[in-house]
Image (cartoon, rainbow, N blue to C red):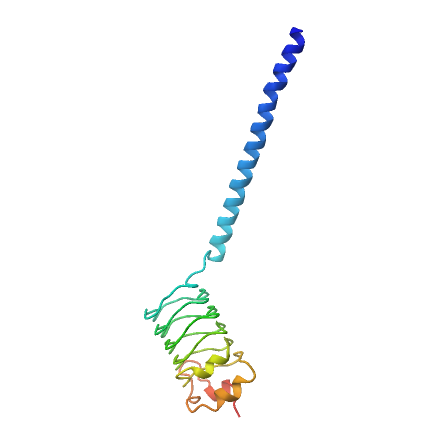
Length: 182
């Protein structure tokens, strides 16, 4: 019986060891996943930048916001004048009376936005994506829309505007030509 008792004690001692091994493996796995998740966020910029917040009346003038996310931002009366906004996402943003004058909006996404009273005077918006609300903007003078994407029914309405004129001071591109207006 003593021999059997020793074997049972050894087996009981091994079982907690197996349990400890499983616990250690689980903890290690969770830590590894957490590190990998944080590393991925560090590479991609991690976070929503300005998405979904109210930045109304603030000045983002003369700044570099390249690639930032402004999705569903409320930016009433906000100024982005002379800022680098290349590749920024303004999807479903409230941009009423927002000032984009002289800004670089190349490749930016401004789809499904409210742009009533917004100014794009002297802006570079080549390759940018716009929704129908571009028609509601206050000023498009000297803007460069080369290769910008606009809804097909919006283009004639934009081309009818009196402020669709002039030459962009940076690119030298004529506003009407950049929109392919007749």
